[in-house]
View 1 (tube, rainbow, N blue to C red):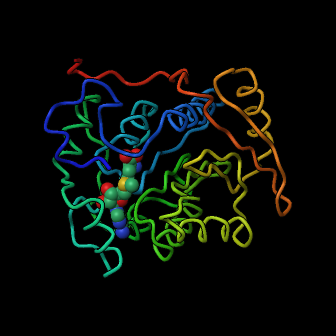
View 2 (view 1 turned 30 degrees about the horizontal axis):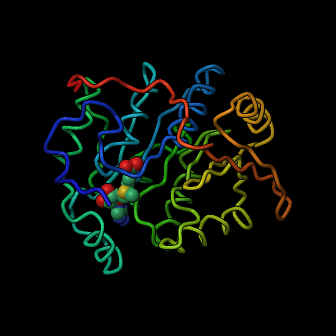
View 3 (view 1 turned 90 degrees about the vertical axis):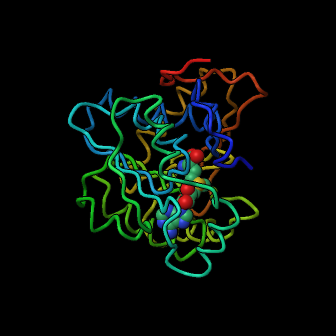
Length: 256
Ligand SMILES: C[S@@+](CC[C@H](N)C(=O)[O-])C[C@H]1O[C@@H](n2cnc3c(N)ncnc32)[C@H](O)[C@@H]1O
């Protein structure tokens, strides 16, 4: 697992930034954000759990004039409960806000709006219905993710996109419970799945799913499978081998 100490060098490219944001998800984030741009869907971007900035830097790359990217992370601040404290001590003990800011500013001229607080703070800081894209990747404990999903539902505008990280990993059962509970009981409609992330909406998933299927079926580097479960159409995506064509990524001002 990457640690913050690995980043005393400035990143020469996005994939130099330690984190858990894999190439297929970089392609999918870019596709959803580009589609919103194409359709002129306006709104802010929000990330809960930024770590050293790997996914936030890509979100910042897709920001348009007049829009705000907000990131919320503890960045070493006191977690709100003992379980979250243990999680942070195990996985993010050396994280600092300074390291995040240094990485982010290697790719962008200005920092995003930063909320250094537990993710439960966002509902008091971000306006209801103001977001077009929310990435939930903070604590992976059920009670937190359940709250973060509720926040995303409140903060997203119509047809906004929510992405849930680690919805199926062996070490994050709380995310799996919260994710499928949201699908079965809280109106969340899955759009597609990668091995790491569930992409969904509280709007109508069908138009975006159809466009995504057409886009992915035109690529020979991504395998797509469709199946139904509990009345939901699930589009599964998988990178074929290691030759995934990357999306347009932001350039570092410190190229290697
Ligand atoms: C998996 S990392 C995020 C990875 C990042 N999105 C990426 O792609 O590289 C999870 C982050 O959530 C933060 N975090 C953990 N518990 C949190 C909480 N209760 N509220 C806000 N952030 C939290 C941690 O400090 C850590 O930086």
